[in-house]
Amino acid sequence: MTGFGVAPNIAMDQRDLGIESEEAEECFFHDYMFAKDNRRFDDVNVLDGKTDRGRRLRLIFQDKGDGLARIFTGWELKKTTKRKR
Image 1 (cartoon, helix red, strand yellow):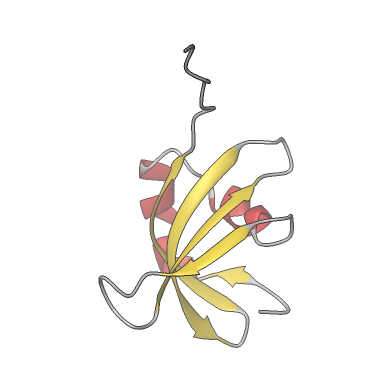
Image 2: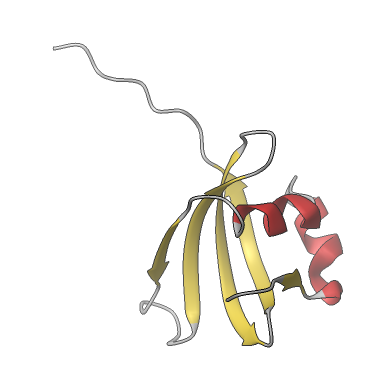
């Protein structure tokens, strides 16, 4: 995706998850990890990205084309701690 926008009909859903639509959009403009999620549907994707404030988010979304994404769900990724051996 070159340009990006979050489909307006899902903005409220993301606020319910503790993610603002602006934060979700920011994840697409920073370094991120991207993968297809073929377990569900062919066109569902997983993105691990960062917001402008450094918040790490995982987003499950569908590429709608024309720079739009429909985000189904998302959550904050917590920092992992190394286990002592």
